[in-house]
Image 1: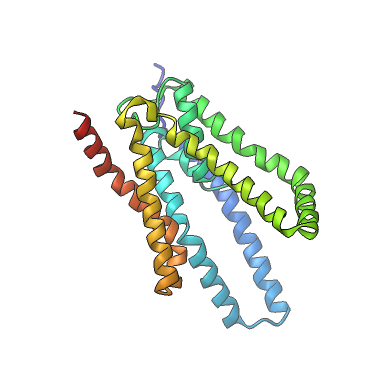
Image 2: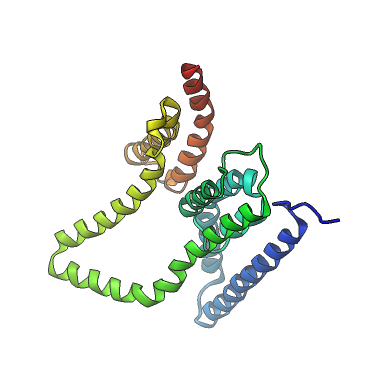
Length: 248
């Protein structure tokens, strides 16, 4: 008898565990090599431990937002795939929109947690998430040096236009994500829910920025992004209930 497909199949957990163990082993290998090299250069152990603790703080705190993405995607995709994609070269700003676009193309949505994914739907989503992010791995070593060289030359020739160019690139990237947020506003008031959630998250980020600037809470810099994401997700529940209540 053929076993039914499951997004949390033990085989998927085993595959992901092997890959992540390889990645972790590389990190430990280079950490030990770096530690030995630092000692051979005469660096103080106390200073090294301070660097390790500081680096750990700057790594773990921003990773809270990544953990949120894993939890959010795991409701539909199971734990292994989001765990893998957001643990190696994935980014929450890419993986979530990619998964949603692939899910819609496969006849479902990430938010539809009432129905289980079929093997073919899961395969489509996994391939889109993986192949899409691989473009950065392939093209970065080929094009990045040339692009950075061009930007450097532009900056030396005209600093003002260099800043405008970089800001335009950044705004173009943001516009791509805004398209997904505003893409359903024509469906009525419920289509505005993502917009309201985005505004709520942005308000939290602005509040954090004001606290950093006016109250000199520099420690909040590392927590601003996770707080805005957690706050936006928490506020998404009352916002959704409020909008649906108005519609009904």
